[in-house]
Image (cartoon, rainbow, N blue to C red):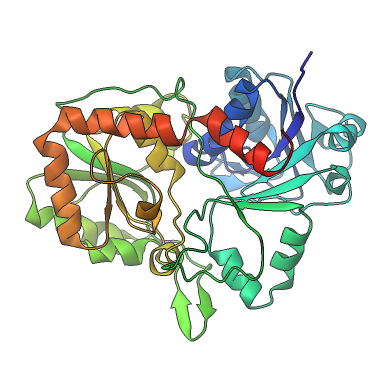
Length: 390
């Protein structure tokens, strides 16, 4: 029996069964679970999942179902999940369709994490609905441009919480469109992400995508870009200015991108195989790194949203210092030891030298930041309190 709230977390880790996306949800689930709530993970929409074995988007849900079952069992939530392809009769697993619809009606709060699900009639039966915006700025720009889909998505929720923790600050230029945002951040389960000290590790690393098309937004005569390639270009020459080595586990769609990065001294590896090994090679890659060096999307950088990456928090919790392109998060989080924000290549080089000058201290500082600012139960508790539910 649970004495706490009944919480439904809507997500897409079966649809997108990679390490970064999966851990995003697992950390939220663990935080809520640690608070003693009755927590359920649900995927329920019309979007076909990606199957990495077949390397295609498919209506065969077998891989997605196995992935969700493995992950929820691993964190103690076996039999607390459901998966439904909503436009197909009889395509519901984990719970029957009747049980799933009743779960919505009976829950105290529905958290639409990432906002990945367009809510339908069944989900709108949930008495309190929270949109957890993990990738800020694009939606705000679209709202300012009167995009109806984004407007309806937000309107279907009672509260919008955002990782844009610099929203409303003097240096933040994100249009807020009159929405009373609540601030939240990336939770991390400190037990599942223990620190590991690796003084002999060679590489500063990161994991992600290099080039992503299709989500740029034109706003007030300027183009705000989604793809991170433009930000990597700003520090392309970095390896030539330091003896530190760098390895990027980036999805590289174009051979010429790979050739260009390698010519400047960046080591490249594919993230695919490690990313589908959610509890094995993905966290191990982070734990065997020396530190992280990473950039952010142009949208977050120029408009100063304050966004910070879930992946960055995994590095911090693992005791790995982080050097991240500043999005305004330096207004919120402590920087200068364990975590560094950079806007120029010289600032990144300074951070790299500082980390290597007193590596053990920097690693302890990184873990301390994760413990103080990102503990999953603390983050989840604050969100529920901001929603007036506890």
